[in-house]
Image (tube, rainbow, N blue to C red; front, top):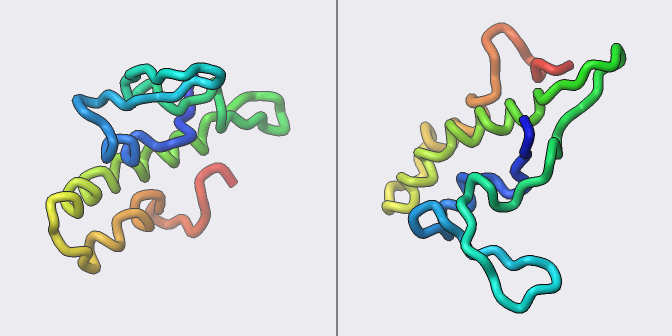
Length: 106
């Protein structure tokens, strides 16, 4: 992953118009419109290096999986649907793997 979102796209969508958000750039008075795909990112922000020296993007991949799962729930809540048990369970179940009680990178 070349870019890691430090502010998840699923949160940015609440403030976006046509997937564009206003971004304030340091030392500038004005702001610029930026696609949420590019806003609030840092290069390889969550990349880790394993003991053998290989690089891994497992944290970003896990966060992406959770974000994909909760996006529809956020949309439903934004439309006024109630926060029921099924919706509350989505974030926790999004990162679980069958037969595993710990994250895949451990």
